[in-house]
Image (cartoon, rainbow, N blue to C red; front, side):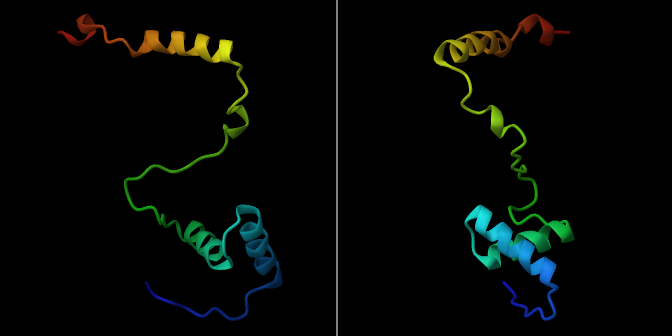
Length: 88
């Protein structure tokens, strides 16, 4: 991998990178790379891999055992393959 030295980083940008690093528990280097990759439209994970989203995180772990079991029963109905639908 290449290395670069970037001079003249605006104070506001530095603060955001430091804030991101602190919040995510990563190094300043990783936080800065994430900002650059996002701005450049690059994806470090590589082409063809899915993105990781966090917009539904607030729903994780909110069901009790009964609710989770009920959801599993309902979801199981949708996992069954109706062979007649696949024949032409």
